[in-house]
Image (tube, rainbow, N blue to C red):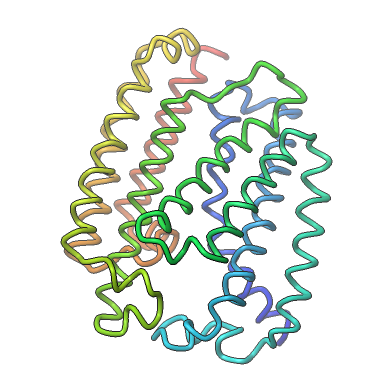
Length: 298
């Protein structure tokens, strides 16, 4: 039973967030190269372990607050099924495994993992209590994941880089998801919001709606610019990547619909799996990108 609870503490269903590490591989044009592929998979695995470490540490720090949350009170640590001592020992094991795995991928990747852990450590210790900055720290963690996907491949391709526009798009998309999650938590907890998380009491639905309009628009603009940027066209020898913009547009609009009309958005990963239109829009985007980037390579 303890293994099942430790697995729940690690939250493997949240590992889908680390799929962003594959962006470096996909846009490198070497998706079917075994050397690139194996290093990318190892990089994703390392960040999955590191993410579980962060989730466990967060649950340790938020233990008392989670017991006030209607959903989080059922988590292994908050419910008492896993003791605080066991959770700490589990964290040490996850830290050792993530560092050991990162070491095998080279110093740049190890340093990027270090930045990821520092960002999340600062978030857990203090910055989660600072309005706006709490969501920005989470967004920067996503950007760090994207950078890590490139760093994992640096030993086989020292010149590999990720477009700045793609990094900006990642930042704004993560902010969009983060503010959507805050909105869901605020409405779910109502008058008890500040008791669960102090910063929630400083937000309002109207303010979060404004922020979401800004960052969703910025996401679409940044991605559209990326698809037609001279560097992008030269890299893929094609202007056709612009045809993937409708998939991104629909995905963002669909997510806004789920947040405002379905009161969803509290768990982006779960929403992705459960909402078929959103799921298939992402699959369509992946297929379109694959065809455009790799069609001329066979």
